[in-house]
Image 1 (cartoon, helix red, strand yellow):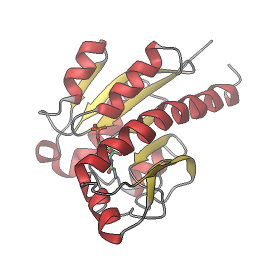
Image 2: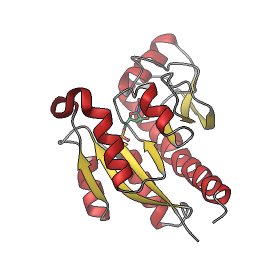
Image 3: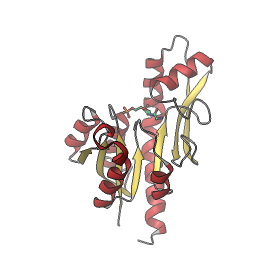
Image 4: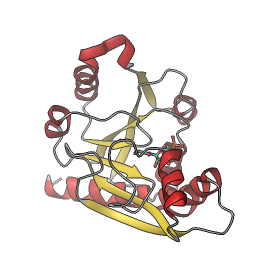
Length: 202
Ligand code: GAR
């Protein structure tokens, strides 16, 4: 069976990348092959996770490439024959030029139930701060396709997570990762890769 070649774009700790690596090793992901990790941050711990897993990684920083940043990512993805892209804690908003280049070929994991607490400015811990401040009793995570609207593409999977008395943003972030993100991201990636390779007729 031919697998989709997957690139994971990261910026930080890379726990979602780790969930994907573990899911590939345990056979949950079988229609895709983690082939490349791209980080915009040379200090990202995600790079160590990629190295340990034997996955090629590349650092492409905005500071270095400036207006050629996205162009450099696109070239790198194409040179490596990438079929599918996962944004896993990638803290840069991609332009329409980028998203339309890979139309229906990019997914993102977001730590809330979209359409709540999403869009520009809602990333990482800020999402959980906003949920706690609003006082919602349920939050969660969403995996969705990426288009030109931040967090605005078609939803693939969601999972709800309860908010508990005394939660801090850090505690909530950890629960949302453990109970939702690390579970639905691998499942969603397998789903889209399976559909991609099936449509190719391979
Ligand atoms: C995750 O919670 C991810 O959902 C979030 O950043 C964290 C990255 O953690 N992404 C966003 O907020 C994107 N809008 P990780 O590097 O350990 O996977």
